[in-house]
Length: 322
Length: 259
Image 1: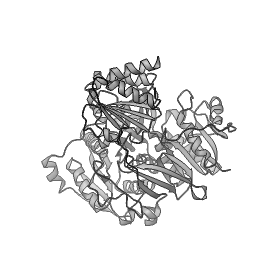
Image 2: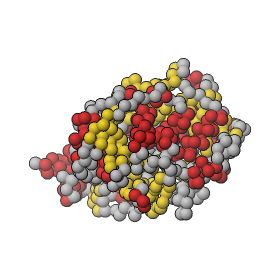
Image 3: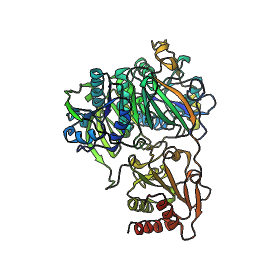
Image 4: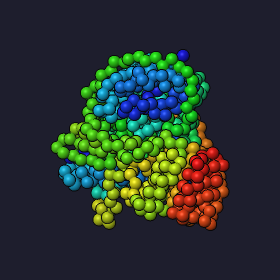
């Protein structure tokens, strides 16, 4: 069976991110999944990758991937595309993943599809990607006409399915070119998110908007999120006002999330915000304005003052946990 | 410093947007065209850097005749001149073809610093700045919330999924900025009047030595097979808080097995 390359997303200390398992699940529909592991730690990750269908794990152990963003990873993928002529290359549809996909497309003269929420084998087994467009108001199906299909898959859109594979590690010799090392990382700063899950990977996201009134007021959003084991999101009004860091903005110009449950608190639901969250499976909203557009798309809405509703909700949740 | 800011005209995100049945491209005829909102931050970044370090800001836009309106608006914010890449054969270009045309235009026009917005609000691929950097073989300094230039070094704060990285490269370089980078200025009356007289150079595919078959729908490497409007979400239950709103919400979460 033809190989399908999957670029692994992993933390700096080598932990496999959930989106990698989602990519493996999609890859399995197109051929034999081979993980491409950029950086150290492939040996210890191989068993987990094998559980989700990886037949091979190409391990390129180099510090260049951490020291130089995007370009070295694109070079590594281009090298492997040349070596194994895969049926497709799948990457995570994160900002960095999409940039890697873009550079790989230029290097290999290939078509690239971004923000896929599903990938299936279409006619002749070639990949067919489903993409929400215009903030989810239109769904399109796309294919690639030239080169090796490159697809960036939105995190949290495909459910990972365990399926045993050999997970055989194969060392790849890779040396990044000087051109790929022209932009160098000199410092890394991680925003404090405590023990909360990643926004784009979380099963539950609790987001706060203008209705929280201040950075202090926004604290109650974090409390509700923690009671649900959820990630925290924010509307543009909140990040613009500096009440919460920009990295947590959900919307047209921020992150796009599709969790199982999205709780919108004090968010009116303007089109800018809906574009980032309306593919969530279940939506709950709390807002004091009964006319707020968020109620038009919410499965459950509470009209009321968030500072009255949330403390009671948090209390009920903790009672429920016993 | 010779700064080129790439600007795209897009359908207004505040209005209904659609695709054209048949070739499945973005319907640009029926929609009001506006400057891609995220490109306004790129224009502002260019203007601020030129003010601080000297030099000229050139607007580069690829698009149909209508895009001239957005080019004028960018000029009215204070850019010095513009280049409009226009050719019927460019219609329907995907990100790969767009990056090719822009890279060739940049080579023709000349640049020290190229600035993009982080993505367009219509296609939202977020790939074009990286693709152009790849094609030009210059440092990619993208997703910047802050851009500093010192001598020939460009240093940015690159937003990542969990915070930011400080990334450095040398001019010439390609930068993209996110909306945290600055506060775009509004055109002044004086700026609007001045913009009418600023030069706009028009370039066709022939001027760029590009073959019509390498761009547009005929050259597209990716293809939209079909599209459909997503079924609208049905509004669910809405209750009024009468001192029991939190408890009711908890009841809903329990019923759906979230707690």
